[in-house]
Image (cartoon, rainbow, N blue to C red):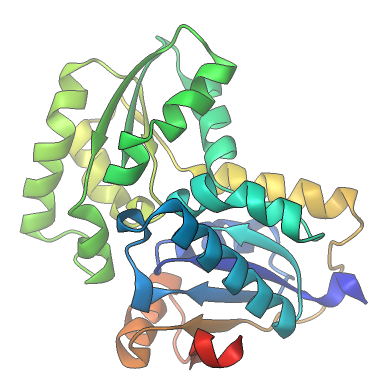
Amino acid sequence: MMRERAIGFLDSGIGGLSVLKEVKKILPQESVKYFADNKRQPYGSKNRKQIEAYVLQIIKFLLKQGIKACVIACNTATATGIERAKAHFDIPIIGVIKPGAEAVARETKNSIIGIIATEFTIKNKIYQKEIKKFTPHIKIFANSCPKFTPLVEAGKFDDFQTYQIAKEYLNPLKRAKIDVLLLGCTHYPFLNKVISETIGPEVKLINPAINTARVLKEELKIRGLLKKNGNPTDIYYTTGSLRKVKKITEILIGTQNITILKINLEENG
């Protein structure tokens, strides 16, 4: 049956595991198949045509593995490829941008918000445009944080270096008197402790993964695709170094001995 199939996740790396973890909290019975395209990351340096092709290629691969829905757990891939993916496939396709924008607009009290994200996301004003649809008169201060993603991929979650870089990125937003801060990259929730301590307790952090998980659950419910019970089976795929990705994935997921497979997309079509 369709509802017994897994939920697919795709990302350029392992940042999307922050979305997977939130989905697991509210849908613990569901199996997942997570695809990390480490070999071709970062997506932000690629052009739109390339990223669209990657998204379609990965979803096609995951469909062959047996998925009933797919979460594009990457801001760049969501911004660039979600519309094409929705038009191309007939399963539910969920992105992270709209749920995140909705959460920010709902949570701000003084209508002064901050966004931290990759250079691609900030430059293209992806979140700014989506947030303005909910609250047109909101003030938005945005800053790109290019060094955050490599820190997470290297497992440097609360090193001295990480704190110093966080101060560099976040102090301008702190001076702007923001009351909520959108973590506009799926890697950033893994730096939650550093970001929270640096920006201060008066600023609420918004993790789009939480709202994305809720949207996914509702979509599966509407389509009658929620798995009712049973033991989940999770499989992870990577196009990168199996040893490195397995090590950091086990740390981020908090589970040892996960099943992770090395994939060559060219060989899989």
